[in-house]
Length: 270
Image (cartoon, rainbow, N blue to C red; front, side):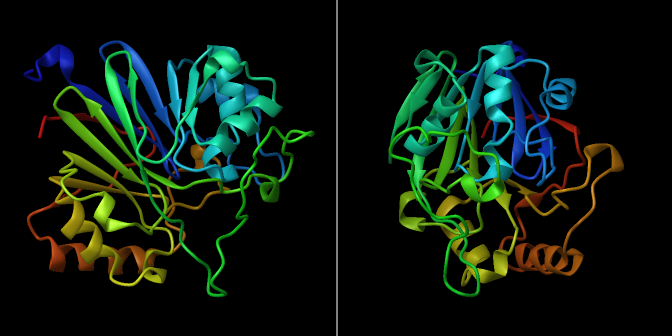
């Protein structure tokens, strides 16, 4: 199928690892977290100002800075939430109906009306002590809905591939990977978390070798607790500069595009 004007994909960065896609009249969200307040994790009125509508919400892993606004979005939009067992159980604890929850497992390929999403097993970054922050899985809904960042357990971490017609968008939402699972994904656009990217050995080389993207858009490098209205601020400018230098060295033909909050980009097919 050719990517006509009606089949174009519009991409918009919402900060952290959050993105909004518009395709064939549908609004698809990835890891939408706009409250950006670690002491009051979700402020529904504020969320609705920035995310007034959604049809699907796809979650790469269940940490607060990826998931904490999703229950509010699901309630006022009726959107379906697609994510891990932990993601679905956290949403269920906030009384999101079972009909709205689509549980993904390793290698799940889920047909969502006009697009397809595939969940590849991946890894979260590890801290200097060798641990993943807030590791763990909810096998059933928490008795009390999560109220603190530490309550949002990681669950399973996935690299998520969206197929919007001929346009393929791969998200690596934490700067780690299992490269053999990503071979031949060949994304049009790679959405790549760069938070603490240097904690993963040869991260840039391994990502590029396994995915061969046409374009890379960094994510998750902004200051997470600053309101969106204050504008984008790198939380570690030196690390970002080293990432850009590494990309230029390893993959000089890959277009690296940094977006501002709410900047829209029309995506070509691969």
